[in-house]
Length: 303
Image (cartoon, rainbow, N blue to C red; front, side):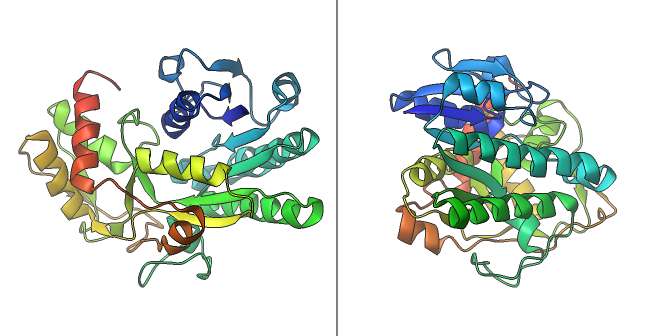
């Protein structure tokens, strides 16, 4: 297939690109390189440097059959400080990519978010859970999902939204909008002290990027459209995660504690039964195994 991956030079996107190239697809990448890196790109993928908010020229040149839409403003703190910018990228950027895909009859797989959409969880949240975003980032991603669902009803398309848990793994650099795994490992690697915000008992659903990639590929072959959680169904506290990171790195260093951050969830975990049932997908990588792979990559001098 001719596939266009928006945000394909970034952490998750470049891993998706690798998998699509490996299965023989003609893979193109739309990325403005504001966060992504040319070094992440597979040599057999074609890079188009462009802004997702102005995607038409790239779409018209590629004429994709499948679009993996991963380009986003993904920093929750930025969304709070600049909600207009967050909406510009995540809402208008998604809408323009969706319309460009429609002109070429391309299916879209959209990278959404689980924790930022569901808000506080009292257990593994299924896709039918109440949606209670605590930050503009979650709201903008939910808006993107609703546009996909509307296009499915209006135009008879079969676009898919995937609500990711807390994704970690190789190519997630330990700065900027990086997740806590990369930040903890980066601090330990560089001889610095990691910071835990709040009491560390807040939980997340940490899912390895390789499992996320398999979910994107599975969704690309799903004819029915819809929304699917992509996580592990298991919650891990920040304290437990730090202990696991210490074990993976072999570096013993006490973390420091700071005041909790505004709007931070206390509990977030996803029910992944629908993805297993309808996509034939399930997470395969344990936290210990995923952390070991991530540390091996990071220790090699990356990031």
